[in-house]
Image (tube, rainbow, N blue to C red):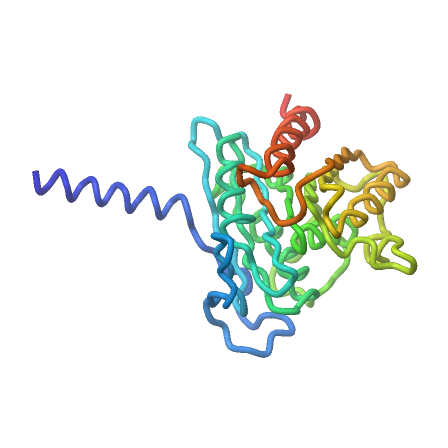
Length: 285
């Protein structure tokens, strides 16, 4: 019986380690970072049953693997929100990753630099795409099928990647940086900061959109204080002839993730899954 119990514990430990593997993005100095590398710290605000971290100086991705039987060869990088101050690591991170796993996606939750390091955050996202594409064989994914989803500030990052995947935001570190960081698809969920141009027009960094931009899914609630952000962005995508699907629902506010009890939180995954099946996964056929 003792051996059986020990074997069970070892199996559980093995399953846990393969389900969540952490990979640090920068082998040496982190571009523009002045603090020493260390693990993220818990933010003071832990309200609403949300785990929030901050003070990220050693950016990383945390891998969540699907069951081998359902692995579809696609990957997605999950960018949690938090106003560039903190990261909602469970509500807009691990919970979303596990939702993607059920559909067969390999998911990576990005720990990007905070607080108030917007350029650094974009650098981390660009680097994350390249690192994951390099390790595609390890994760049994197709390097041309790596997409991104972002929430709130993370959605702003995903939108910037859509426009600036070919902009060198940091000096090349190694051969990984020769790889394109263009995403295969982009999902923008209750974004902020996308209409920071004059008179609430499109943020200038987002202007480089064209028909080759990745297919994009945009979702927001009309009663979200940042609701105009998604409208401006969706119109810009449409004008640039980017394949886009946009949903604006009446109620839901902001920052709901996938959690039940909020009409927007219950709506967007349904629309998103249908969009993925019709516009992303269909390319497998």
